[in-house]
Amino acid sequence: MTQPELDEQLVQHLAKIADRLDGGDENVDLPLLEEFNRLAGTEIPFAEFQGIYGGEDHITYVRRVLTERATNADPSLDRDRLIEMFTKVLADPCDDAYLEYVFATVEKTFGDSQVSDLVFWPGVYFGDADNQRELKPDEMADAVLGRYVQRKKR
Image 1: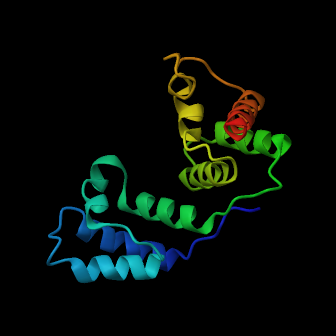
Image 2 (image 1 turned 180 degrees about the vertical axis):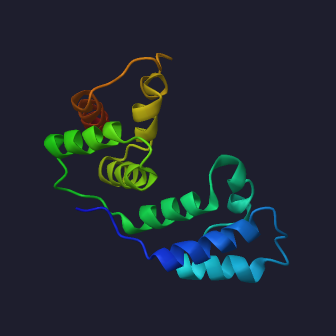
């Protein structure tokens, strides 16, 4: 499975719409919300657009939404491939597009919605508040797979 390529014109257009919706009026901007959801293939409520700018750029938000939508579970994803993915994440943790792809792939494949915590806040992921530890890619892969096995046992 490879990282999805996004239509850059669509990304730019949707980012402009998201910018207008962020802080907009729900009644006045309903046509914009409908256009965003139609073009993105989503059903995002108006409230989700409120405050995007405080947390991330609108373009980053749009890339995340489109990447999550275009990414599927990968049943062939194994420990070695997870290690490769986490190695690349650690080599360039500012590559937002790749991060979103990895996070979406792991969540959809293994049901682990906290993989971003594993990378950036391991204390939150493990529940022990030790966010100072620096995990190696193989330790991250083992953590994801370990959680997956535990979930399947339930």
